Each structure stands twice: as C-alpha cells, then as structure tokens.
Image (cartoon, rainbow, N blue to C red; front, side, top):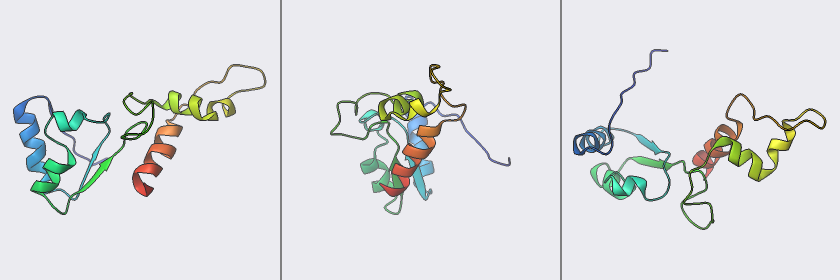
Amino acid sequence: RGKRSIAIDLKSPAGAALVRAMSAKADVFIEPYRPGVVEKLGLGPEALCADNPRLIYGRMTGYGQSGSVFSGMAGHDANYLALSGALDFFRRGAERPLPPANFAADYAGGGMMLVLG
C-alpha cells in the first residue's frame, strides 16, 4: 500500500548505473543473490559504499558468502526447512510434510541473519 516499485535490468549498463545513482542517496541496500553475482554487475559493497560511505549494505544469501558446501547454491525456503529438519513439523501424523503457505525459513532464518548477522 502506497509503496512504489521499479523494475531495473541489472545486466544492462544503464540499469547498473541507475542502481548506483539510487544507492548513492540511499540509507540501506539489500541484495539477495549468490556470492559474486553483484560483483560481476559492478554493484558489490566496495563499489556502492565507495559512492556512499554511509550506505548499510546487507547481503541476504541463502547459505552465506563462504564456508559452506552450499554457499554457491541458490537457496529456497523448502530447502532450508528440509535441511534444518524443520519441514518435519509441517506434517499430520504419518503423512508427507507439506511446505507452509508462507516462507517460514526465508523470513525467520534469512531475515534474522540479515538483521543480527
């Protein structure tokens, strides 16, 4: 409600330039990609924070930036729930578990790690 949105082609030079211009005036920048993706686009923390030293740059990767065999993989809510064992809570009796209608692991795990580190 009342929120504005914009679609930007990050792979185009004009799109990347627009993001850099916007982030130069922003307080916070949050990116959800696998490690190295935004660096290839020229939108990594080194580039954006050089333009705006006050910028808070948050990375919301699925499995972290390094140190895990999964860190280079895309992450999805059902994967997080299954790997953590939490998916088992979403079953009735002996039935197969069904992923929840909301994104429980994305919101709870990813959001919490983004905020708390």
